Amino acid sequence: MKHCAYIGLGANLPSPAGSPQQTLCQAIDGLAAAGQVTAHSHLYRTEPLGFESQPPFVNAVAQLDTDLEPRPLLDFLLALERRYGRNRTLDPPNGPRTLDLDLLLVDEQTVASERLTLPHPGLAVRRFVLVPLAEIAPDLCIPGLPGTVNDLLAALPNVGPNRQEAVRRIG
Image (cartoon, rainbow, N blue to C red):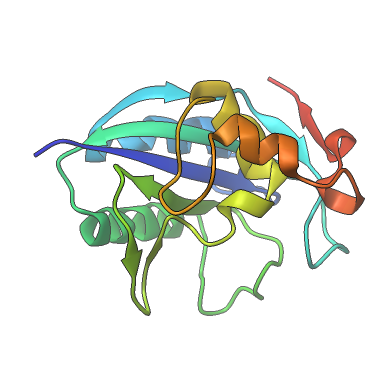
C-alpha cells in the first residue's frame, strides 16, 4: 500500500556532502531509496529555535510516496541522517547538526509511541516547518489540528525566531 509522507529536513553544520545546502539537496535525492519524491520545497535559511547560540539552519520539506509504514520509514530516515554524520545519542537536543530528518506526517495516520509521534508534535508551532510545507501542500489538513497548513501558518505569532523574517527563501 502506498503512503504519502511529508519529511522535514534541516542542517546547520557541514556534512560529508558539503555545506548544509548541499547536504539537504543530496538528502532529498537520497529519499528516493524509500519511494518517489513527488514534491519538495525550496531551501529556507532559518534562525535557530530553542538553543539559539548556533549557526542558522537551512530547512526544506519533501513529499514522499512510499510503500514503507511509519516505523520502518523512521528507521530509514535515521539511517540516512547517520550517513551524513548525525549522531542523535551524542548531539545535544536542539543543537547544531549535519542533518535532521523529521517525519512530519504519513497519510492521515496518528501514532503516539515512545519512538514516534504523528503528526510531528512541533509541526503546528514551527514556522521553519510550516513555510516550506505550505509551499508544497498549502491546503493539507493535519489530523487533530484545525484548518489547513496555510491556516496554521497564519495563526503563528510573529515574534522571536518564529517571526516571518526569521524564515527566508534561499534557493
